[in-house]
Image 1: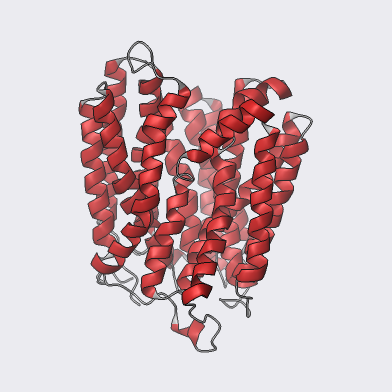
Image 2: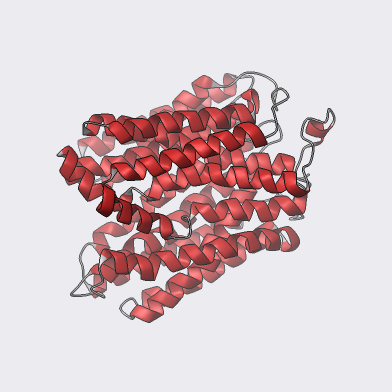
Amino acid sequence: MNTGSPDVSPGVRDANQLEDGEQATLHGKKAAALVATLLLSVIAYQLNASMITPALPEMARQLKGSVDDIAQVSSLFFLAGAITGVVLSRVSDFWGRRRVLMAVLVVTAAGTVLCLVAPNLPVLLTGRVLQGASSAAFQIAYVVLNERLSRKAFATALGVITAINGGVGGVDGLLGGRLSDSFGYRSIFAVILVVGVAASACVAFVLPRDRGPVTAGRMDWWGAATLSVALYCVTYLVSHGFADGWNSTSTLGYLAGTVVSALAFGLVERRTATPLIALRHLKSRQVWPVIATTVIALSGIFAVINFTVVVISQNPGAGFGLSATESSLLYLTPAALIGLAAAPVSGWLADRRGWLLTLRAGLVLSIAALCVIAAFPLQKWTVFAAVAFLGITYNGLVLTTVNGLGVLNSPKDAPAALPGLNSAAFGIGASTGIGIVAPYAARGTPGGYGTALWISVGITVLALVASLFITRRPD
């Protein structure tokens, strides 16, 4: 374990990949076409994640489901995404990036068709689970950029792809609401299907063909299975803990499942020739602090932007009394739009000033913005300015650098392993953060909002501390 590797800008392709000319660097129009194709592929995921949110009430009415039932339309999608992001990105090390990305888009399209024609909620939920496979598009895209572009082009292009992770400029949710109101919720899935088919065609014609596996050996399916069970259990452990109590039977059951599956994963990885990720790597300061920083940062900041501020803005008594559309336009769309511009610049900056320095600067500035929101939670325009600033510091600096470090710090013998684990960390962090602050924000009082916000500040400070343990993988 190397704990003192310097934070210098690395070459972004491994030497063994270059020896046989398997990962030729692309330039000019070919590089631009590659980035555009990967961008379309990740948009296919992001639309699945965000466009259907405004249509959930209509889905509940038409499919005769309760609010709790219809919530699974989103929760199962993100859970499936966390699992498939880990598994399929690692599979691409053995089967090839192009082949797996094509399979991801085909499975996603099949799920979209199911959602489009679903006669009832169970069929719709099955389609949403299949759509969750699209999460792997982000991780595969990051690794492809790393292997096919020059160092400088990789840093900027990674920022472009990461910008979509915060929403398609904030217009995706608004478009979903308009489509649902005008043509019904099924029209949303029709639009998503068209985008997915277009992405599949572009991948087929633009992405360079695979020339054999990136790493030798076989896929660790037992490790993938045990880790998937662990991710499933830890996700429901958090939700049931806050909903049913930490000493409830359901919570204790998921706790036991998490511990057993995590231990099983460790045993499998020790005995496998080509593990999902070797335990020696998982324990190194090049890997675990990256995952920890991602989980904790998402827990702290995501909950503020996407939950607490939204709750405050729509509270007519102790908040701003905005409608859902007004809340989105004022507090979600600006940060997403700013992030579209800030993320590519953040990649460019990280390449020149250091990925770790840029990450830590982003966390410090995000903490400052969160402190302003926590200190003045009922001042509408102060909160607006602080959230917009988070579009630069969080959507730009933090998200770009944690994704970049996930690629650059991944072990050479498993280049897609850490990006996959980092993708699961995003989902776990987002759901955990909301679960922690929800009981306080749900009080609907200034004191409750303040408590929720200061808790988020404290969590984000812990993310900064975790980032101090990261060391760079030597090139």
